[in-house]
Length: 432
Image 1 (cartoon, rainbow, N blue to C red):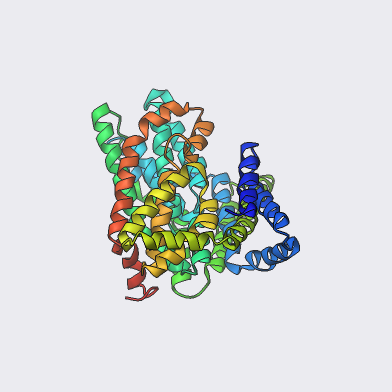
Image 2: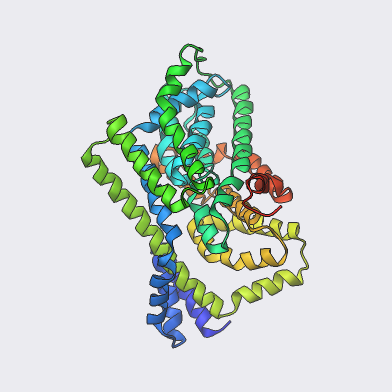
């Protein structure tokens, strides 16, 4: 390795060990590399501002974050939970089943695993532990695994980043995630049912047919939002970014005019939270851009590609290697960093092997979501532990059966691309 690359890795490691935010760690490492190799720092800044931040597609990211924050603050989640309880509450492990379904519904508005965990995931976990009905470790674990459904559904923020990196269709990515998301939800619900029967967990009272229309009526407007988004995008009426703006307006109308549950003072908090989350992502993007420039300048992508080609892997063999790599990286890195730093190195290899980039993107996102649940450092484990006050050790004991089921879906989609490509292909978004 060159002295510049040693400088890059050394500064990055030091900054990370000192507890600096990941974005700042990558920025510091990238600038240290530029200075040590006598390159123009100003040129990189110019390219970052006029290239990376000039993407129209990226505007959708803060808009979807805003939608999720509005829905959280306005109490819309309560209506979705009631609808979920009416659908699946009577199944074994009733509230745990509601956790999965409510996260699946809310994910069509948030696109973020952390948003799902801190929204419906937190509410249901608290409901489950009330009066000791469920062990708190199990309640937190179901919220952790249910939150992984968010980035597999339309409005997925990781999919937007991947589409930007791989020059793939956002619409194709959104459709491609629907079948894997459904499979993941079914597998999680199956695990819950098995555990509930073995441990005699309670069911909720079955909702009568007479009550169902009223419950559905209370939830129909927020339920319509994912359909509205998909309709606008796939009809060609709007771009994904314009659809995100319409979704934000729709959320505000629901919160202020229809339900009247959001006050102006709360809106300021929503905007503040959105700005903070967006700034964090923007900082990671800037750091990743400079870091990637240094890595590319040192020929690392070519080295990686040459190594994989020497192994003479089949497309499936390469995807299995990606599965393993993504799972390991997701334990220690967040999904935005993986997408912006690691995935750009792998996309050209996938293309050279003839792998459809939509299929590759869905496999990457699936693996990252599973990685967020893996002990000992999965991000969602720490999020739910902090939100619920549940010791990590109790959550660790409950997640293994769910992880096995989720890994089964990852392998299924890896070996059978049609699970990710069937819907986009029939919609005419990718070639037959």
